[in-house]
Structures are given as structure tokens and as C-alpha cells.
Figure 1 (tube, one colour):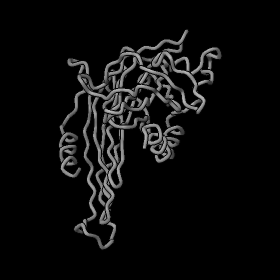
Figure 2 (figure 1 turned 90 degrees about the horizontal axis):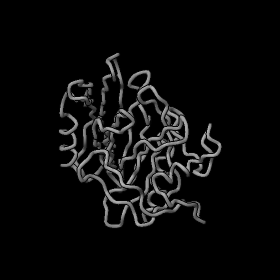
Figure 3 (figure 1 turned 120 degrees about the horizontal axis):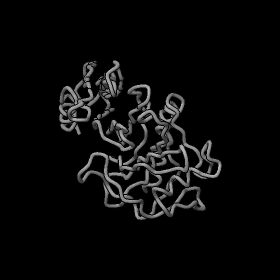
Figure 4 (figure 1 turned 180 degrees about the vertical axis):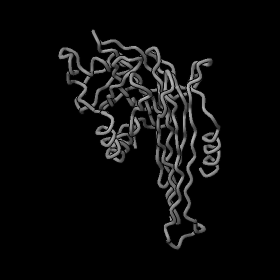
Length: 284
């Protein structure tokens, strides 16, 4: 299955989740050639061309281009895959946020992956639309084959700030791999708060899921504390299977992130998610 078709199949599988996000957190998927509200002479395609300068509509409904602009990976270092030689972009996710008390627009472009790359190349872009549209920052948030905003796609950290939540994923016949990145926007730049990896498994004897949720609480300044919780649940099927029968089980694994003024970043209170990732790796 080629990369474009596989992305479409995965998008169809996640469509209900994506539309739930659209209802709850204003994630939208406008036609790229449509005008931006309040800027009738500017389209989303104009914003996309700040990322892929030669992006243009093709005859098959996709937008095609070559290399994106240079950018860092949100996690730093040598993280991230490479974009394909030819980009085939069906659409982009759009999400309005607040950052530093100002209105900002974010767009997430899943550009696909190079043939020799195990990871996709997904661009998270930040725009200022208060005057002539400007690209403020762009990072690669791809850590797996396909990337999206999570549901919800943002989390309020106070009256003037939102954190962003992206996910990268791939599936095989009975396993699902999800990598979630929690992103802070500070001084009109993207900064990673943490990466959280979860793993779902559906076999004859049982179904095991790891559902991730976020909650911001308190009135801490400048940013609220964030509690992330993975609910790790196993549900037996009751079928007669080759695998040994599983017992029903559920546990919550939580980590709280608080803003550290001296370090000028969020700091977590435990390594519980790293331990979970190591446990999951033994089940791959």
C-alpha cells in the first residue's frame, strides 16, 4: 500500500475521532483554496506555501509540492523522519489558540514520509493573522507514520494560553502505537513539554487499551499545572484461544507537570510514563 493510500485509510479509521475534536476544540479541515475568515484576499493555501513554497493543486484533488522549508524537530536532536520527494497533501488541520494573551492560528500538515524513512514528516505551524499573515514558527512533530491533533487538540493553561496536543500513530493487524506530544507555545515559539507513548493490543483472549487524558488545574502563574493520566485497561474476550486467558484489570498512571520558574520550563513529578513505555516495549 503506498503512503498516500495508507494515510487515507488511516484517516478514514480515525474520522469519528477527528470530527469529535472538531466539535469539541474547533479543529477544522477547510479547503486549502478557501479564504481565511477576516482575510478574504488570503487563503489557507497561501499559509501552506509558507511551509512548502511550490505547493499547487493537482488534477487528482491533492496539493503537490517538493521540499518544505528547513525546520527543527520539536523533540530536538536527530529526531524525526524525512519528507517524501514529492508531497501529496489532501488537506491540513486548522486550530485557533491563544498564546501570550494573543490570538494565533496553528496548522498541522501531514506531508507523508520518504521511502526509506520509518517516520512521517508532519509540520506544526504557528501563524499571526493580526495583520498581514506571518509564519512565526514551524516544527516537525512526526514521530510515527501518520500525525494528527489529538481529541482535544488543545488544553487551556490560563485565560491567555493554550497547550497543543499532537499524536503520531500506526497500526498493524492487532496492535496500535500512539506517540503523543504536549506542546507549549511561548514567545511565539513551540516548546515540547513531554512525549508520551501508549500501546493498544487486541488479540483473541483480550483487548488491552491505554487511553490518555489531560487536565489543567489550579491558578498557578504563568501556566497551570497539567495532569496527564493513562488508563491502562484489559478486558477479557471470554473466547477459547491459544493465548492464556486474561483477567480483567484497570489502572491509572498519572504524571503532573508544573511550571518551574528557575528552569523556565515544565517539570514532571515522576518517570511513570517512561516505565510504562519500557513495559510496553516488552509486548511489541
